[in-house]
Length: 259
Length: 352
Image (cartoon, rainbow over all chains, first blue to last red; front, side):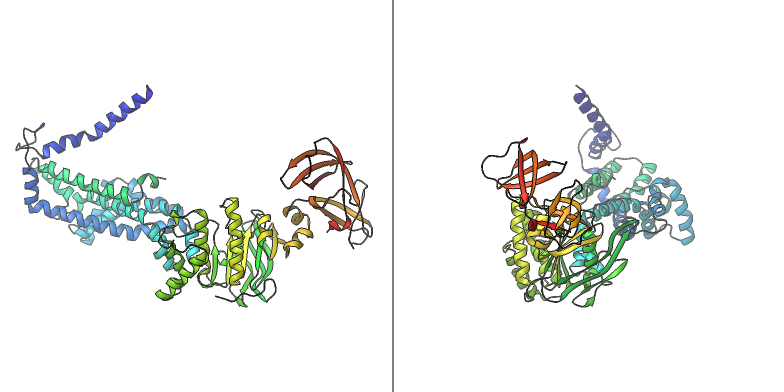
């Protein structure tokens, strides 16, 4: 009896979570010229409009490379940070440990205003690399969390074995430690990518004329509303889903990382 | 490969001098000194927490000692990083690299020494043949059984002709039968290659099977270093006597030459030169009791266990003394409650 109740509640929650998708998917394939549910007929027209519009394509590319650059930068900073947080013993380590997670805790809007103020002085507003820097700040906690979890589970006798067999610290890192951390690195990098690819608040402040996909979508909704936005959403959802599948396949599960 | 030399003789290949290490308030090593001869297998035997693993880590270079010196072949290696020590080590959990094939695992130390590719192939093949794993090159460690993993770890530790081989409780995870096979195999290989070896274990039986000499450790200090028979027959103190093998340990005073007075007034005839008046420990191994021995003990059997080749009897003797006795298993197992008399000859009693 209670088991059935549990199943029913879970089904309801899933339905609730999936509801927007159940609306968005059909609308993206609608033949009607405006938002209408249920759609009166089938057509690819909104996908065609998206693909034919250089502004959309432009924004998509920009989001892709900003996301990619963010992932790379976040890994370059986050991996050494995670190593020092897990392995090094120094004064203020506990403080740094908390600080590393600050970007998750501080409201994004506050962060955006602060970054805007700083970047205005540095003339970084409207540049793609400025956005990469800002997104890296947001992505860093995810990278640190995932890599630190991987490092805590790491069997250090493997590193000792490598050193005992004649490997320098550097060789040990490159041949043993990093290859064995690859699942964590994959997860961290892809999460950093998604966090940037989906991000709209910071982009609204900093992107200027250089539209990212989320910002273009936001603007599109403000200006005109037609089912193109649904088509874009569907493609964005599909891309993020693919990335999540990749994490599940090659990365370290988020479940393992939550500690 | 290095040529084999007679074990136990030769010059000291490894020299540990006054090595001390403390972790906070805990003294892990209390100025330990020992020597291992070229080609010798020395076992460090001790309970967990005795400092044996810390000592091994100091030799391997994973722990820096607070004081003391470690030299190999005359060269001081105390300050060298592990990578420069040229020491092969088999870890307790084998520490095989899970992402590398058997071949890549064994080739690793050679690659780190910039050995040429053809030479690597040849030596890896040789090492794998030596541990009877030829044909397993492409497997990953997780595709191997525990015994096979251990062989790979061993091949990896010897493939680069190390000056020293360290074995850290390598047989702990294997079942009894496999453990015995591996013990003999390791011993055979070690002898053949003439490898100077330190073997760490808490298993006294294993220590007796494998070693040239045994160093018994407790509380960060070496209690006794001696050959296996010496350790068993003539332990230096209570701890060694109790830790190695089954034992009956009594304490008393020498009342006359060759005579020990026990606290309960009994006198034991012993074969000892200790001066009258000296406080001594007396060790009687359970299997040394025989029906007609000179020093007689009469007691009631409290517990009788059949062990295949022998009976293990626990006697409650007159005067409250408990005695552990082993007798060859012939006839019926004596029933608990019966009173029997056993004896032990003076030569069979060790006085320390």
